Amino acid sequence: MLGFVNLPLFLQYSHPLLFFSSIPMQFELLTSMKSLHKHIDSSQLPLELDGTFPYCHRDWLSFRMVSRVSRVLWYLREEMAW
Image (cartoon, rainbow, N blue to C red):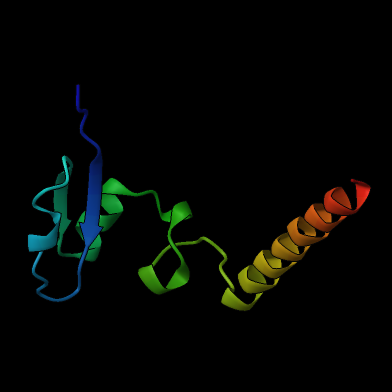
């Protein structure tokens, strides 16, 4: 049995959504900041979308790199244990 996922989309310009036609999802097209804020709490939106969520791409990249390096080191340690 296929379920549906409700996925709000916020587009600031016209965008063809034809490639989603075969995916069993329900889409809600949000075309204004007001409708975006009706569906998503401002604490989850970055400043660029009039939210309060503190987001720094550089910090995110650093976090991801440390996470990836940690996984590689763990894998190497496991392989060397053999």
